[in-house]
Image 1 (cartoon, rainbow, N blue to C red):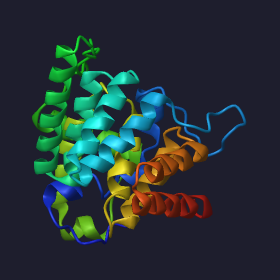
Image 2 (cartoon, rainbow, N blue to C red):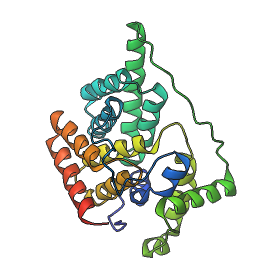
Image 3 (spheres, rainbow, N blue to C red):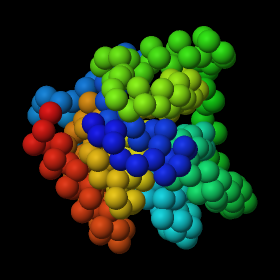
Image 4 (cartoon, rainbow, N blue to C red):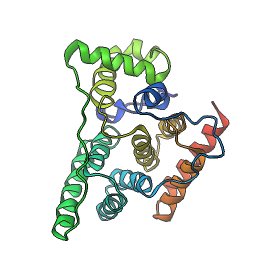
Length: 253
């Protein structure tokens, strides 16, 4: 995990520094089985619902609103709930910035309204049900989640240099965001990989999230399928980055 890349903005940096170690929390709290050692009965392709998620992410990251509309419709047609779609677009603010997140949410609002006018009933889905604490309790929850996700207490020269960033990570990222239980970890990682693959210059974070995807139960075949989906949608460079990250994840622990 490379935590030395320059931080261009606070919101962009939050999820990039550590999400490469998504391990125990996913397995314990989300019912996900880690897949570092894959067996023959594990899926090698993404489900129809899963296929739409990285497309939503990549088109949000590139501000391709026409293709984003199509990906949103694809996801809803495949069984993605409105709540899950909203959660994906909200989470990605930390990778693509608030403006793109707000624009994408506006697009989703218009898509769902248009679908309703056509007589399509989309499942609203559920809102988070796990209570989110505040104050010191939130920091404690976030620190516990951070330790579980990373496999060990998080420390290093960067956090000695700027300890406040770890406080923000613990309270906001691992507290406010990761305590939300209305979207499974595999879906969150598919979205993250899609957004990062669409963005040049952050290959270290893409590699970290590719490793994280394997740890939360996605297979190498499914991640290869993700790259194929991106390429079929005209995102050749994003697909190439995703494939390079997968090769690197296979070569290193």
